[in-house]
Image 1 (cartoon, rainbow, N blue to C red):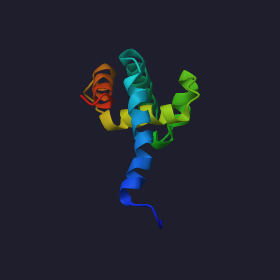
Image 2: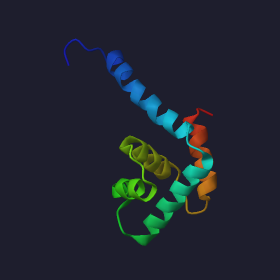
Image 3: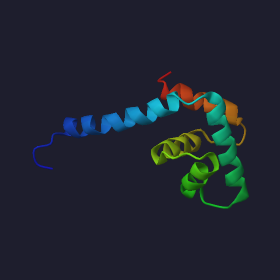
Length: 100
């Protein structure tokens, strides 16, 4: 990558990272908990490997923005727990997205 410094690459990637955080930060805790609950049920059903869950999530909730569906699925994966409720995990994911 001639002519591009390491800092330039990081700066070029930064807007995408901020967009994902902003998207989750603007999601209500109730909506995110509903997404997480759906993903928990989908996981238990065994219908799909969770790496392939994005289209199921998008279809179930009519999410047209695939990047947003990906950010929700990623947040679910980061916070997955058999013991914590979807509400608790949604609260933690939003707090992390907000930088708290």
